[in-house]
Length: 348
Image 1 (spheres, rainbow, N blue to C red):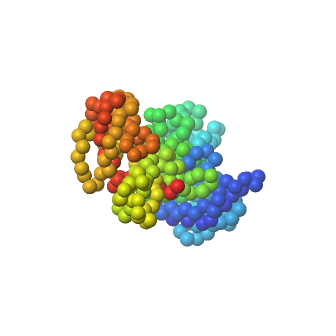
Image 2 (cartoon, rainbow, N blue to C red):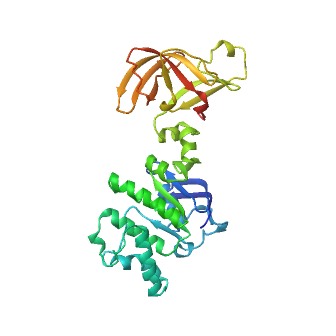
């Protein structure tokens, strides 16, 4: 399947810049999620790749060859929309085989491909049913099968499961991953759901106002975001301002060790609540920053407990998620242990 390279891609609608010099590379047979809020340029990017929209500037390449001048039908990129857009007057077999029929593929081959795809989407034997007889989840499966029928070089998915209920979304996530792997697809899908992106994608591209903020594996983005915007997309986060000197970080930039040192850099540190640890007794560890703290709030949530703590030298309370079900109470004094190896230094 194709490697996709997007170079300095820009697009305006009514003088409003929707994409701003977007640069992105998707490896062959990779699944990449475009993640971001409504209006950040995700769907526009898919439409430009598929050829449904023309770019103002920039280039799109499949395996190093520009497709920017090719019409949609010659690019080999198929876009599946949030709405399944099945032909209501055609049965399921005719819907799936429509693109093959338009390409002049003989009936015997079309029939075989439809049978194969219905097996792939877990709807064997549905050839003669009509779209109106199917549930929303089943219709979306047929839309996927129809897209795959023509053996596209690139599969583009525009929030294909956002209209489904929670149980169906889980099933469809698994199906999309299965199709991607079994068909050796290069796949790009749009979502505003961080969990969906984390569970399905090989890499995630986080977008904001038409620009790419960061791309990386789910773990890279969760643990090592480049800024607050990316960090906040992936769940709760604590932020600590301080100064970094070599490998050491000090939450108090007025620390005695830093007073006469001009090389200390002011830094913003991000760390996830589940990486923090509370103890009643103090113990030292070279890999930890340990601060005297006080619990100001405790919330029991079954398999975990949420704490808010005020720590010495820190301006803002920190959130702690404890899966060990420790028995601390609000008002209790504790020691907060911060593993800096699991922290990320952010751009302001």
